[in-house]
Image (tube, rainbow, N blue to C red; front, side, top):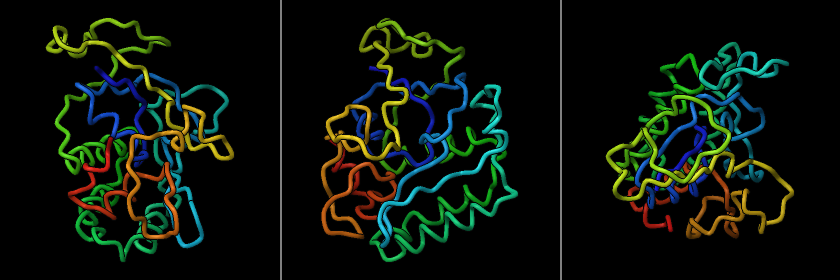
Length: 224
């Protein structure tokens, strides 16, 4: 099965749990940018509770629609420092923060111009962290609906599991919703509860960084 998804900024671990059972990943590269989604934000847990980290973008509030591949990051705001300081404060004492910190920091300080490029770089790193080697392709044009047929982006898989599973906007950072709603991270049973830095209890829907910093190389065993 091919997973069709938008590109996220440090998405919930449930996203990678889905990829663990997929034959390929098709990233939506021709949609319009949408605000208040995981495209430019993630959720982490601090001593004060769940906190969003948002990448500021240029022209994200324009009335006309802008292609996701053209959205530029707003480096006039000191967001890298804020994000990194927050991650250090929240996870600096976690077992595996230092194990991954340099790899993440190198991408941040590289300052990619486009949000899409930033997210692609983080995705490649996170796939390596989970030892996921599935092929990744970009869409060549936008389709509102994908039929259940072989994807031209993955011709080599046409004789195995060619169906495209459209999971665009399956994960959203919405709050105040019922856990039973299928489009929310809280509804996902794909991530086995693991010890989190700030307890008690298990908070679902957090960025995959929360799982990595807690479990390190064993993080993949919590994906169901």
